[in-house]
Length: 278
Ligand code: PHE
Ligand code: CO
Image (cartoon, rainbow, N blue to C red; front, side):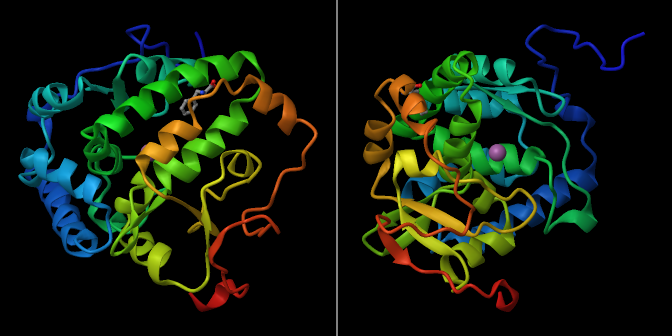
């Protein structure tokens, strides 16, 4: 007998079993959806809002991956695959490298609307899939998957994990109307959607690839620093080079605590040190 259950399929995918969701589970999705609709109208970036609009079926209730996939596939060639939860790094990266996004299937309970530490289907689908409707971001995610497989062999996975965290999960982007959200971990959280833009507490710093790869992150609280890209073309261009020499360079640098501000940072907002007053 093994301690870890072996997956039925080598790529860890399962069936979503959409018809098994209860009316209550669909209602939780709709509550979360409508709450975020209100909050994100003026806070999410235009690319996220356009992607969400393009996935119109997502408003009805927990989406059936088969229906989402026909829209997503037509837009950028990505496919959502169902997984039971976290999958091994190499499996996750291999999915991304093949334009497959692994999503959980379960939805949080009604008493967990505001906070959940592990990803659920609302985070994975509502948070991530709208950005996968954007051609540049879709290519970025695939490149990330390929880079992940490479980083595994170069003992530098933590570097790439930080990049994912500060872009895909918690990224902000400039827009003519002001700073906007594109990070999935933010858009699927009511509290952080407001906090990341409006609270004086966290830093908001211009995107800097190598600097981000030195920066530790928090998984159990709102972020202490957010990194702001100019646009998705900048993010894509900055991550195109082979990272192998970057990983070498980074070996002689120190890691940075999440709240650190460096002399070379482009500081858009210097956070107040007192994290009590959020
Ligand atoms: N260019 C990176 C590498 O050589 C791959 C990558 C692309 C990583 C996009 C992250 C995002 O490893
Ligand atoms: Co996520």
